[in-house]
Image (cartoon, rainbow, N blue to C red; front, side, top):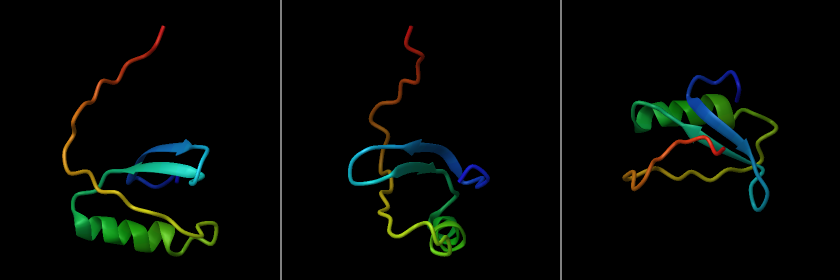
Length: 65
């Protein structure tokens, strides 16, 4: 995922999933290409779930000091 230009953020997490990816693409067709070329063919990916953003409610990037 480090080399995938579509992946803007990647987090290793606890719980039901091992990783959370933030993916930025132009449209649904580009997302489909991402799935087919990066996830479906990757033998290390057993399953995944997608969530598509409908609206940004809050976004406050900051550094905690």
